[in-house]
Length: 409
Image (cartoon, rainbow, N blue to C red; front, side):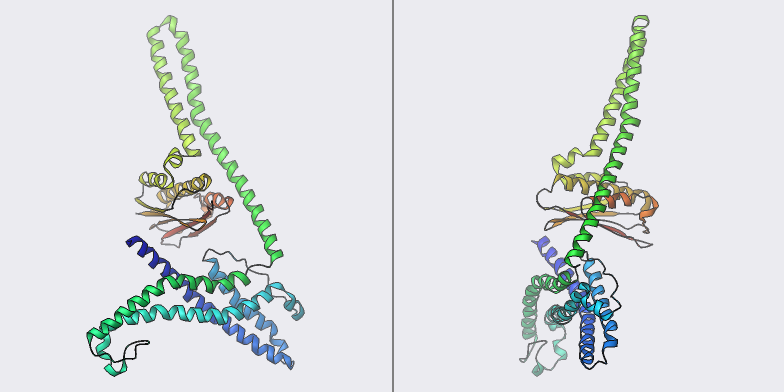
């Protein structure tokens, strides 16, 4: 129960953050919408035509701010091309028409939702804290918000606080719904037009297919190197030692026994090398006990102290779990080698048909995909599975790696 309440509060706080962000972009959209209305009215008499390109760029600016906000909220919205210079071309541009619809809806409806969403928890906090300051207010004035009746003392103030608790209990589940509704116009109208969306999707699939082939080739080369440098050399040594033992068997049986002991040791080492290669393809613990146990094993063997929190009901597809496992393994290797961190944390949870994975450390930061730290390989592995990879690593830290993988059944 405590964990459920904690999760609900966390989701509601995230929703409030999105509502406040949406309120900011809705103010920009409202300003752009009012500018467009003024320019449209002025254009009727001809004086506003020269201001149309500027008004359209204002709408584009507001739309791009919302695109950036939604892109940080698991919604990828590509940037449109520049606004056409000519008035006729600008009016015919599907991107522009969709943005005009967006600023009209988000600037009015989104603004109202953001204002209401911000006022709900503020009113609830006012009610809950009322017993701390009721004595500063004349009794005839009443209480905060809709409390207009006389407050005669602490019992009445506690009754108001109890109302605030009820208000808060109603507000928490409502905020996520309001955040989704506020973001809906942006997701609907700021997405690319259908023909552009198809071409972008084709380009994305082409790139991810190439990345998948590259990742597959890299994995094959890794396995080949492991077999060539490890197990194959051990097996060659076994063959040489067995041949030497056969030749020494008739001349010096004691020497032949020593050689066979060395061949036996080499064979055991070869088996160990083969087991290591097999575990690198798909760890048995991942198949037998699931993702949580496999990640716990990774964390326990890491040089940097690491906590693991997995909240994934049931099992995902084997390929998804394998991708998540190897992403965490590579990330923790980077933490141990490059970050100088004192601790790390791995969090995995499922949200609908997406598996959300976060690896964070308190190290020095400044991680860069171009410095050969393995981050490029992580990105390719994730994008090859049609997932998303985001790295946040300012100089001085901390470093946070967020990965999103599709895991629909």
